[in-house]
Length: 248
Length: 322
Ligand SMILES: Cc1cc2nc3c(=O)[nH]c(=O)nc-3n(C[C@H](O)[C@H](O)[C@H](O)COP(=O)(O)OP(=O)(O)OC[C@H]3O[C@@H](n4cnc5c(N)ncnc54)[C@H](O)[C@@H]3O)c2cc1C
Ligand SMILES: Nc1ncnc2c1ncn2[C@@H]1O[C@H](COP(=O)(O)O)[C@@H](O)[C@H]1O
Image 1 (spheres, rainbow over the protein chains, first blue to last red):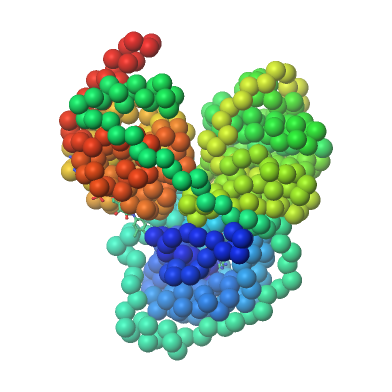
Image 2: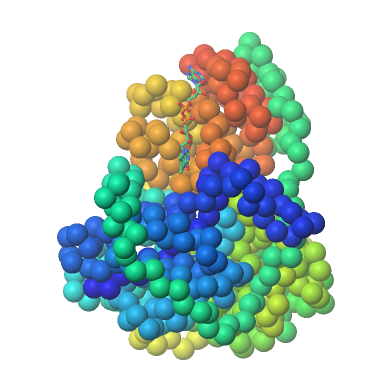
């Protein structure tokens, strides 16, 4: 089985979010970038398939050269090779088009992406990629087994979960629950050394139009001070929730 | 040329988000000088949509669609959009809607903007405001394609009633075998319980509650409020509560009207998932807990004293306001 794991390179969860150039660009100054957490769950499952079922694991990112350390980290965790499509990831459709080309050329059976990136929270790329490549698609995936050509997956739904059966090729949108958190790996010295020798191929993008563009960013208006209520006066909270906030 | 919406239902009845999508679509249609057409799949009685500004309902009745199926549902919506020559298609943000939207975007060749929180700032060019960076910022996105697909963020618009009556047309889309290449084997869903996704009020407990044996008061508080229960990540990691209750950046997003956090410190990853809630209340015995910076109302106190008291006061309030 050939697995492709799509890796989005995102600001660490605790990063300060600021914008530059008249609020049109994200300010990367001092920001630490990481593998998107949802992709890390997916990558961990991919490496499980590699170790238990002899799958090969390729990681891919659409982005500039600044994303290479993130791809190297994925290699250090255990992926076999990496691909970077050398283009700025401007919109979900554009990225999905680039990834579709990589999927078609590489003949991948299982494509693992994340439910969403934690930067733009699009939740767009996996579904678009599945449709563009005519693959089956399972989103918010919290369990995946593959047996030959057949896949059994668990999907989180509102208020519960469902079990689905389908066939490869398959794209999943991974999230927490797909693997145990204790199974996530921190690259060790040996992994880091080996990653340096692994192949990282840079491809030029294919022609694709952009259907959306981020024109401006805004920060939410600063929040007012919290209203403190004395623990001896819980009545007052009920009163405020009813008369002021009007939520009960 | 109408604005097309998908109105989600369950067991033959619309979910509340269907009415929210309709309310929003009505105002988008007014800006465009157009009308709203709703697609309803296996809904017994669609008349309630009239109240929220829908002009026409395409009612699909098909046993094959009794389980949600991403490809088949996207196929139905694509055919409806084409038939209606829709230039704007609007979905909501349930798990199913978020699953459908990108698939539909490709079959309609539509630019897709997810997590949209307000009416379009302008319709030509077509610009919408979306949340980004886990609710730490907004992003104004221009959709440049001919057909525009919008994913409305949950609970961001509310319900708005309108006068009028919707016409109902039976709609019988063509389904093919490939639409059913994913099969539902089993559905495991708590019945009769308010889910985090649908709840107007969410009561959430953190590590400050010390152990699973103390969750009775959280459940009691949720019960008086008709709320869903939730928890912080360590609580579900330790198995005190089921994984489905974990909210936050890596868990479920919460966009309720009221979020009550008990014994939760307010770490940035927790807040990232609940920031979209309108009113936040924190109960924590440490005045320095970061949650106090994010909350609207707070009580510095011991949860084991404050919560039972709050339950009593709410019961009195309910009795007086029934
Ligand atoms: C990549 C990443 C992703 C993460 N994603 C999430 C996520 O999605 N959701 C999430 O919740 N966390 C997430 N976390 C974890 C997060 O950083 C915090 O560790 C977690 O939210 C803390 O949970 P807590 O507030 O329940 O526990 P604690 O931080 O231990 O806080 C307990 C609180 O209870 C208070 N308390 C103690 N006793 C009482 C009492 N008797 N009465 C009242 N208050 C009391 C304490 O003052 C304290 O503030 C993530 C972390 C990382 C690194
Ligand atoms: N630039 C990118 N390169 C590779 N994969 C990506 C990129 N952007 C998004 N993805 C994948 O698509 C998932 C969802 O991203 P998004 O649609 O941006 O929320 C991510 O978790 C990644 O797996």
